[in-house]
Image (cartoon, rainbow, N blue to C red; front, side, top):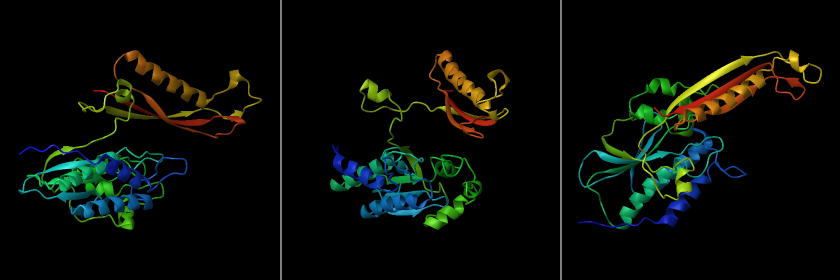
Length: 291
């Protein structure tokens, strides 16, 4: 028997906006760093939605949350999801879209009175953004068995708080071993995070590959001196050298002629004063390249 189902688009959008209220920034956007009070509020919101749909909810030892819609047969599940933590100035859709869309799929099935043969699951993973704790994608790589759980839980934020402590503080440190559930397949609806689909007026695309990322960090050491009295010929300005590296990274990416990109995402200049030219400059360059 075949069914043609249509989701409730307004319900989907309303849910995304409701989730976006947790950690909302005054000027727009969302800040919901992993295992913070804002993250807890977002988690509580999604878990409440899961329970309202009658899903069986579990939390694993790294804080990944899974809601299961049981199928007619005990088979490995089809998992949907993403993450709900954000960067410091995040948006409504990155990660959140995959989680809320998964819940909307299950709500649509329930509206139609359909129980699938396989179980369906919606999961959101911990610390995918990697802003508060490093590395990024932590919850999913631990779930996949590619990163040690103990090492992930021992990661510290800038205040010296471990992920283990932070998860306990917000009540999302579970006992279940990450990845111990039988998963047949995984599907994630995600925003493009780029302009191509919009430019080409294409509704949806399919991921066929991922970027190989290389992060480089450089520390350039110069000599700081008075900005008004030090001749240009006698300056050793680390900030200027760092700026030249940023320009070079862009020119290199363009000259190679492929799909590779280069981004200089962070500068830390000392003494960072208008009356002084720079002494040390910490320059971080993230250069994603297709392999």
